[in-house]
Image (cartoon, rainbow, N blue to C red; front, top):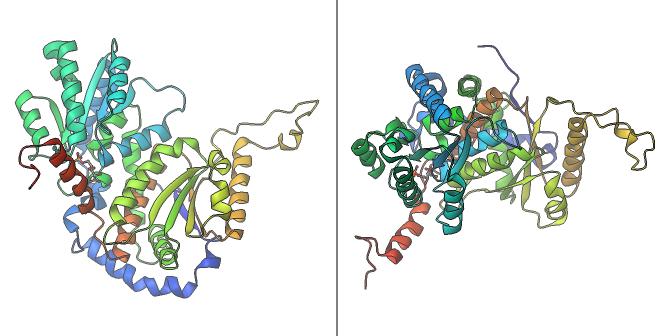
Length: 436
Ligand code: PA5
């Protein structure tokens, strides 16, 4: 495989907060966690299927996904992706990062089932009226209430609008056997795709969960997978000085142990906003258990320098920051020269927006370090499918390592159950009646 410069960790703004000995002390723990992960003997190892997924994904299945996506692109100008959590956040993240901030490629992707808002659903139904619509309902368990309600409502709308042809426009992505969604698929003959049993929701964006809607959106899903495959191969080293994903995990845990319990992911690229949400779910749901975990937060700069910047600089000191820097200037957008220079900006005319943005990053990092905020910098080559695939895998692997270093299972989410039980009880779901 051709080597492409992808993700590197720059530690110059975190060095002052972490001793070399602290990193060295974690090395042996990293080695044990790595070995357990790769021999699939670690806690939660039933859900380690994502680890070698990029290299093992079946080409025939990939082709089937591409063919279904092509069919959707030909028949629909709107694809409604129904799902919650890991069943939609990865798609939204990649689609918004690789797509345009204004407009869309050919078929627009919109989302449902990630809330139970009547306002949102009514607005969505109004929006799709008169448009050519397809559905992709995604649920691994096939039993999650929010997407199940949305699917029932949208399925009803589809049959009312298209009659029996609705069946050709509904695509399901779910577990091979279990769950109500699988029953629905089997009963109605919808085209379906499988979520591997050993890949959990928040680690599933590189499976059909993300690949089908992303292919519809026009993303080069083969390049996305190739990028992830490069990461799979490169992030095998146990040495903290040569594996940036593990170094990132180690820095996070050391900072956490020193009282920096909130991590703020900062990007200087507005189209990273949904990616931040995917990242928050990945780390929040993987690490936040047993009274442990680093609270994941995020900001988009410069925008948030004028809202959260004050807190970052002078607020309570429990924050560390991870800055994502896309290094290549892909647009080379020049600031124009103005003869009169009333706004005094001519001193910038030999620079591109990217160069100014990167100086804003440097200036912010310097200021925050001075204000007592450790800053880890992750340099990413550029914004394209290959690098985004790499970055996704990078974060999944660092997240798993970080969770193992803190002694928790990265792949369960026992805390998500309690609200569901309470909701079922309050709504009177059969079998969940309130006990006297
Ligand atoms: O990461 C996870 O496992 C969760 O966020 C799930 O993706 C989310 O709860 C949705 O579950 P499901 O796909 O079973 O409907």
